[in-house]
Length: 597
Image (cartoon, rainbow, N blue to C red; front, side, top):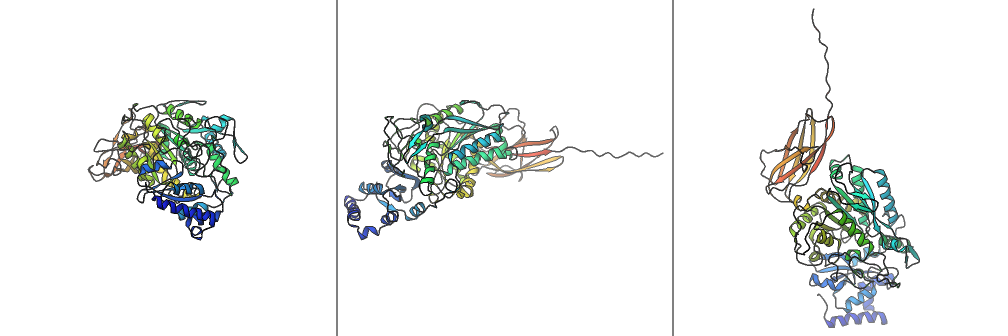
């Protein structure tokens, strides 16, 4: 651990005491004093760098609000601390420095009173928009209540600050074309597994990460608005199931919103759910108000899952930011989420930690967090690799090519965690599961609203679409090439298809084949393949331009879908891409026959 010596620690404490008792000029001129003197409030927040020697040292920081940022080159993490937290870190011997740039950005966040923090949706607005989308696309969407939040189960929660939190239903949106066989069956709150591959996207398990519901909602809007217009989205909705939970923690999000009304327009940095009585004794666990990053009530739902629940990267203290609850899956939000996902995706991994899931495992999960521009994969609670490390890394690395993030194993790359969603999904079901830490450290948890539309959504949209494409067998499909620049030119009576088949960031092997199928995707038994040719005459490169002709003979007049897929030298077929083409009406001209006499 990167700590000061005992003598240095005594000097720090002497300086602090001098400030407290004598108003020392030396201390008043320090960066920490500048932060607090501006606020004149012991509850003000200072952003600090905490230096460490080994990642495992960070286990000792579970009581602090360590942000999702780890500078592995300089060996420090960022944390938000109040006055007492800062003194405690120094007294414990940590080497701590203030980060003035991030601190200034954080404490000078624009005070916004229009909507929720300048445009973010409240829980009520998120739910109203889900209802609107569901009503507008009844053949494609199904809004499912999969459980109840803690406060809804309790009838309501009395929140310190004279507010009453009513609680919320837990809502998920299923997007699929039920006219195509294989959909799950939704009967009220009950869900019965179907045969379609499932991509499960969830957001906002940490309440203060308010950009993540917006990205999830934009993904839903994309699927429903572009169905029938975008060929890739059309086949995804036809043949796959996409489930989206925009806020996994609506009670916590509601608490964050309170800051907008009560705290000069700045959302609270509440991370957890709203359970303030974890042992059910009728006495509040935590009386701190307003909530500070280090000290607030609730259970960290991303430390509460039933797989790997424990002390690593979590706290036993109810007021700490990473309090993991009194027992594994103690929270209604956790129980409901695990039940929903388990009802949609089969368990495909053995019971031992060393058991690998099979290559043809179906299903994939992504949980959206902020921040640090990372794509994280299991394990988070241990340093050694997961049994499917090759597949997890391959998928993570491929997703990172779309959003430009760093792909890495969660525990060694960021900091140790236990009871996290991605570890549970992989550990219990065997599916590849990933955490997207969205945004850089300058953006933080609550950047200006326009950042979502200008940066975060455009960066992550293609990664989410690729995840949806490979959901049928992600460990296998990721090894194959991708199809890009797919186009069809109509030259009656033929249609000419062109595409790029690229294996450079997947299997990294030469392309050996490319095929097209019409109206029936290539994985179906009755699909008829049309061979596409390399435009340079031979398949021998990792990136190949291909072309082929489509003869409309036997096809009905109107629009058709063309599926294209490539295969590399290892025999791996990659993700499918699609395009629309039209079979025109053949018009005949009649010329009168003139005969002579």
